[in-house]
Length: 559
Image 1 (cartoon, rainbow, N blue to C red):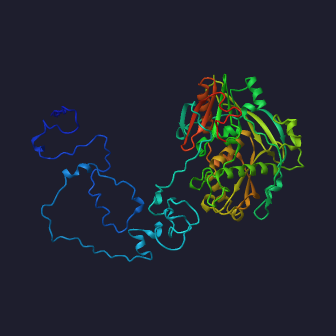
Image 2 (cartoon, rainbow, N blue to C red; image 1 turned 120 degrees about the vertical axis):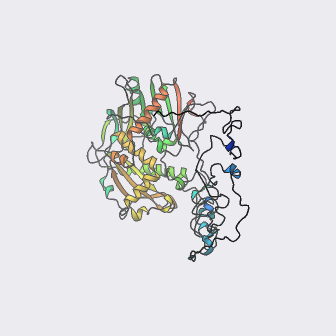
């Protein structure tokens, strides 16, 4: 027996519309209404028997948290009246009786019912600690101890848990975008995270400067044996790649294609962790490329709690105390001051200096050699080639601050600072003076979260320099209201590679980012380009700028 199947005739609408044809509609379907729809409609449910208008009518507990959300309509709800079944005659004798036991309210009374005032910030009672009514404290909107008026806490009518009405923080760009700047490319962080490039070990090209030993006595500093931070007057140079005479000499001999410093390279390799805006100047000279920083730009200062989210330091507006003590710019200056003095203080003055070559940036006009800070500039070459017949190398100037016990054990010296235990990270971690010895893991984890970008850059700088250790100092204010006097409460050692792995820093991803932007600029005509981190979006923008955009005396950029 052979089965056959015949395709029924298909009738297209003459006007091209979607739906059954009125001219060829079978007789049995002529009296059935049809709800027109668009093929772009989103079908969320096959069937929905709930009426959105009456779902919450008898609810005993109103939920103001979701008041601003749009109700989810069933598919075809707009045309549902055509199918609505209406009772011509209701049975009056039928009624629904609730036979369940009612639970008595426990303590909160009507405040947890329709208005939810006690936990939402609209009730009455004593002053709260969590901010105004919108923040969602457990009391009222009477005098508070901090917080913004629309912080978005556990209730209230200004956003609830979601914080929909929370004011969006707008950050300023690190550089003013000129009207004559042209956008070359824009890359978001999601695309950067997919890049990867494996790079072999570096080749040492040269070493300059004077290095002294780290004082082991600071490893014994604890919260019970503190040491005050001293002001140490030492000269420390950090010129850009274009102003480095050693890199200029290597460029003349065609030793590499790309030239940069470790500070600039670390920021670029850790770009997806950035929140604050920064900018890097790319200058193409023939077939060579220089990665520079601007004098007085973001690279000359240390950030504080950049990744802390809502608990990040405010901008230059007055802080919670009504002053300028804990603003972002003031804390950045304080952290820079702390790192400069701490790196010089932990050097043993009686140690034997190691000087492979004189400091290339020091001149007699700057003073005698004794005023120089301990610093060894290591010039290292990395091969960024992808194919065997390709040649793309990078020379980076790295810097180490001391040697530990012997000259071959190099170390970076960095410092983390605590400015106000009650304001820092929302007060969720213990004060360093009380918990650094017993809860060091929690404190370090909190710093990794709030300063993810800064610590990742320090770890990358240690790897680029070939350092064996990072000496991390924990420094707090002697008084939270005084930003001039500080105390060292601990110093801990970390290996750069282990520290990078602990923070989930991918060096292969960083090298992939560097190679991508180097290729992008090398494909452009000769000239000057600026890579800018968008201050309010997770993306990088590459601009082509005039050759004199950042000349001395040019007021086109912001400090």
